[in-house]
Image 1: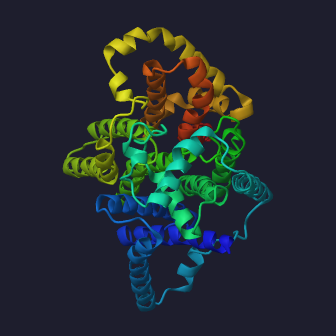
Image 2 (image 1 turned 30 degrees about the vertical axis):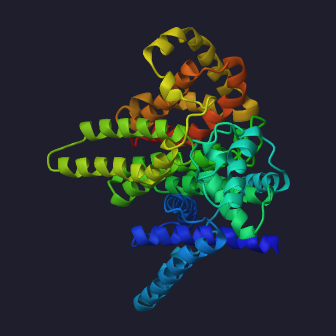
Length: 474
C-alpha cells in the first residue's frame, strides 16, 4: 500500500507541473522527455511554494488542506484540457509526435547509448531506494526539516526560532524539505527510504532535459553520446563525497534547476523564443529556492545576460531586450521572495554560515594566501578520474581546440558563466571561516557537480564547432 501511495504522490507532482506548464505555455510543442522533465521541476516548485504561502497565511500544511488546494486546480485543468482536445479533434500526426517509443531508424550505437543511460538510471534508483539517509547534510539539514514540517505542519515553531535548538541551518532554502514533506503527507508517515525517490527523479529530469535541448541543435546520435557522457559521470552515480544523485543531498536538484535555467537562456540567445526565456527565469528562481548557492549562480547569470543584451541591442529591439532582461530578474525574485521574507524574520544563529557578512575587502586580503591551495585542490579534483572519468580533460581539449570559434558565437556567454561559477566557488573558499583542510574534501565535489552539466553542454557545442570547421561548414 505504501508503494501505491508513493507512486500517486509522484504522479501528482508530474500532473501539477504539467498543468502549470500548460497554463503558462499552452501552445508550445515539446519532446515528451522534455515535457516530463519540466513538469517534474515545476511540480516540485509549485508544491513547495504553495506550502510557503500557507506558512505565511498561518494555514496548517496538512494532507487535507493540500488536497483542498490542489484537487480543484487539477480537476479544472484537465476538464478544460479535455474539452479543448475534443474541439481540436487532434490528428494522428499529433498523436505520433507525443509517442515515446524508439524510432524505426535507430542504429546499434544509439541502442548501446540508451542502454548505458538506462543502466545508470537503474543504478541511481536502486541506491536511492535501498539505502537509508547516510550523509550528514541529507539527514540534519533536509530530512530533519521535512520531519519537523510533517509533525508541526508550520514553520513557526521553536525548531526554527529558538537559537538553543539543534543547529541545522534553519535559513537554508526549503524546496527539498518541503517536497520531502509532501511525500511524507502522501504516505501518511515518515519513511527515510521511500522519500528518496525524488532524487533519482531529479537526476532523470536532468538528463532528459539535457537530451531534449541537445536535440534542438544536434542529431539524435550526437545528442545521445553527450547525454550518456553526462549520465555516467561517476560523481553523479556513485560518489563517496555525498553529492551523488542517490545521497539525499540537494546538489543534483540544484544542478537540474540551474542547468535548465542556463541552457534555456542559451536557447533564447540563439532563437529569441519568449518561452525559452520564461522557462530559464522560472528554473533560475527555483534554483535560488533550492540552495544558497543558487542566488550567487543567478547573479552570475544576470551579469552575463546583461553583457549579451549590451552587445546585441541593435536598433529596433532595444525595448524588447529591456523587457526580457527585466522579466528575467523579476520572475526569479518573485519565486524566492516568500521564502526570503520568512527567513529574514528568523533570529541569527551563532553558527550560521553568514557569507555575506564575511564578504569584505579585509577578509579577502587577509585570506589571499589560501588561493594556491584552493586552485590546486580544484585541479586535483577535476583530474580525479574516479569521480569524473576523463571529462574535464576532454573539456579542456575542446576549449583549446575551439576557442577562436567560441569568441565568435553565443557560446562565449555560457562559457563565461561557467568560468565565473568557478570564481564564485573560489571566493567562497577564500572568505569562509572554516578550516580548508576539513572543508574542501567534503564540499568540492558537490560544488563541481552543480555546474558539470553546463560544462558537458558547452563541450558538445565546442566539439560540434570543431567538426563543422573540419567539414567546411563553419
